Amino acid sequence: MTEDESRTRPKYEMFDLFVDLIVDKIHPGTKALFGLDPIDEPLLAHVFSDNRFTMSGYFGPETMMPDPDVLASMKINSVLGRSKEDKRIKDIADIYSLVWYSDTEFSDMKQSVHAMVGSAKIFSTVSRFTISDYGLASQVLGIDRDEISRVIAEMTRV
Image 1 (tube, rainbow, N blue to C red):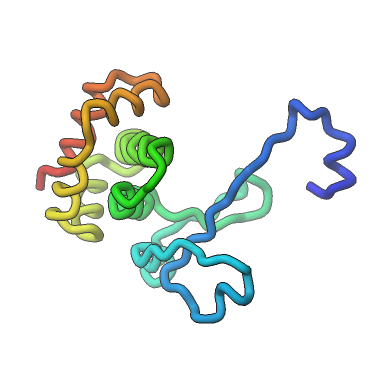
Image 2 (image 1 turned 180 degrees about the horizontal axis):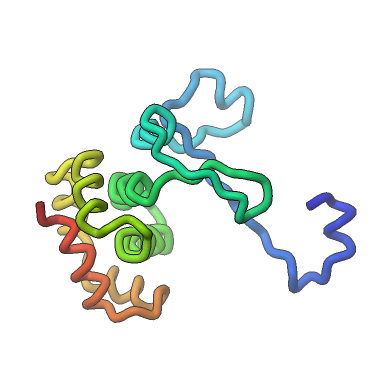
């Protein structure tokens, strides 16, 4: 939407959208070009090198959307490094939603995430989620805490 178009829209139809710049590897000139350091997520390389994406026009122009198993893997890989609790809880909610509600069969999702992240990393990450974490994710999703915990714990089993 252009600035002129935004002037004709009611304020209640508009909201701020913050987009994180995530790359599979940081180019040395990135900060000079964009004025910031993007998030370095090596698992994103699967999108480009393994064609693990679908094209979607849902949000306007056709956009490359990573496959759910790649996104779940990235979330598992990064969730413990989150410094803000709300981001950590959102990541836990995202992990649950991606593995439980995507079109990918749960067993295929597990197998793929284990291949990308590794069983030890998945177990190490999930074992550090607390009852409080699951409770807060439950409030975000409107789904019982024990259900979220059960689904995510199932991801640790090979």
